[in-house]
Image 1 (cartoon, helix red, strand yellow):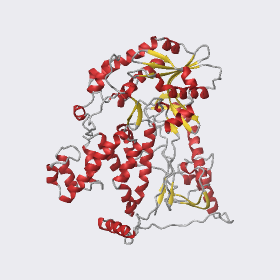
Image 2 (cartoon, helix red, strand yellow):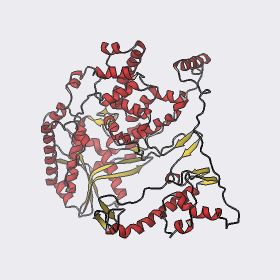
Image 3 (cartoon, rainbow, N blue to C red):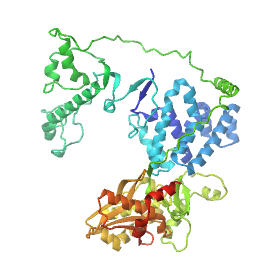
Image 4 (cartoon, helix red, strand yellow):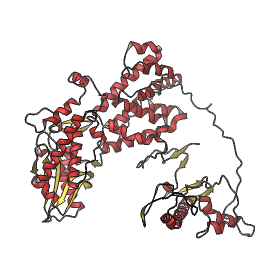
Length: 608
């Protein structure tokens, strides 16, 4: 039976999802032999288990054009292997400079997965997987994730019970049954609704944890079972609130049943796989009754039994039907087209003979402008390069400049670049390291973490991703952390830092969204504080090797507008905009320039 569902669980239990992410992982982590083996066995290469094992045993880099590989493969299999290798190297190079969404799109369409799901009717339901993968990539892209961070972040969904959150995207719905949870059905109406398996119960509250927490009594430790309470860990406060918690759960279950029933416009079917008549159901399951309300059917049983009782002689608002068990049957595939290369080639030949593609009209895709923008990507200068598809000024790169403070940082960044990458530098050869490297962006992340902790007067909590490139080099890691500690201390001793510490109100890493024209600008302000005179100061930390404040007029102007709107700051109250260069322990006030900046015009020129 064709179906659609918006509740996505077991994301990685589907083969296409595993294959797509295995390919993406291999583009970043070439030593990942499990991903490599999965790609070789996937439809993208379609090798047998024996052939895959033979290649993995050779311990060669992925898709090596080596005579040893050719010796373990038949000619046809070797040709598929070579074609997959060409595409792998192409995608690996493509992913270095293009956004995640474009990388995912290229992989889905050009690997053949898209057309296989269109052709092979037995796997057509996998076609919507691309929409989900694309949405995950889009969300990660908005968080400025690299490809490595993206593939690492989705590992949490490898737990088959894990649900994809925040995936309310408009999937193309085919004809069929819509499967959705009662929670998801709010506000929806269908002509026919089935509420299935209403006999199944929910998990009981047995207070099995080592501690018990309640809003009224806080956290208390559970003691071993006692004679008075043999079914649960004894806890006075748990027992005291048990009846109240039970009443809340029952009320919530009744609310959910109401939501489920009222989704049906014309017909409503309720199924119960273990029906048995319950004596005194009204006394047990009506509000205030003494029965344990454990299922949807328990909620409905009093009214159902009332109408089914012999005492009731009126018209029933429903009918009851016994459905006998049936063996599972499968639709015959005789009418479906064969999933073979010969059949596909036959179709292509017919399309070419009919001139289908030659005479087809080009469909112009609407160019939908981006709704969200990040102020940190709005640069006002022409001196820029592209990293991971994002505009980054050369001032943020690790170029060897003279008289730059903290040269140890540049040395550590340089040392983290693998030797093979240095050998290929400037040759035009593509190279992706098997080992994580320490980038200028990683250093900036760590420095920002230390500055945030200094303002909040807490201990810095480092991101594993930021230190991955130097985690194995204890000496370099210690040097980086000592430098960041020194930068934080110097900021605290500076006039700006002292003013922030003595401020009546301050926020570090302050997120915001602000509407500017037709765009929504969203970002995070490093520091904003309110002085005793009522004025506000916005501080943006920079780890650049050179000081080019003109690059950040638009960015800080966006911050300024956001602060004014969020905090309802009157026009006559001053809002300062300050860049603080951590390497130089120097602040530069760009308030006047930010006030003169036409943000909407700047955004428009940036996009054009």
